[in-house]
Image 1: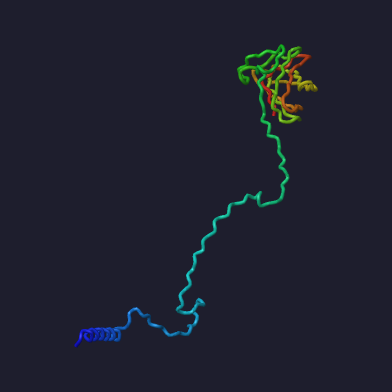
Image 2 (image 1 turned 135 degrees about the horizontal axis):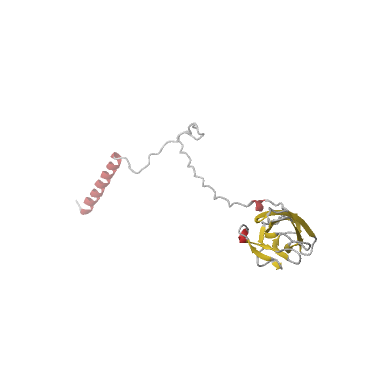
Length: 212
């Protein structure tokens, strides 16, 4: 046998062996073709039975909207709010305050008085003028006078150059017992002088005055 014939026989035997192997062993990588199947009846959810359930995409919550102030949401123009003047706190001034004006009147020691003193010797040419500041508006205000007298006396009161008010004060019958009296006076806005006097006789001694 020639060399060429032997080589041909070897290739032929190899081809037969490969064919036999393919016939005996089923292909491992070939997919098994499935016959066409009719669509199945719909399941409870309305999808075909056996069909894959569609994936549910999770809903993401939208970011919170910035809050809008009520003024920005409303187009109505509101009228300006009426402003009221601040309440005027009562102001108390001591008669012996150095800022006051005393003409002939003198400071007297008084153990039962506020700050231990009062202003006496008011009457005739002697007068006492007390300065009041910070009055928020012009109008009537209540003036309270704390005084001392042993016998009835007359006290005259005037605001700046205004009319004179006259009070007949009986007191408590002692120079050591303070007594208070109140009246309504018309005061200008801002600052003013309140004058205490008695040009026809003696006036009681004065300890404090309060405007409120």
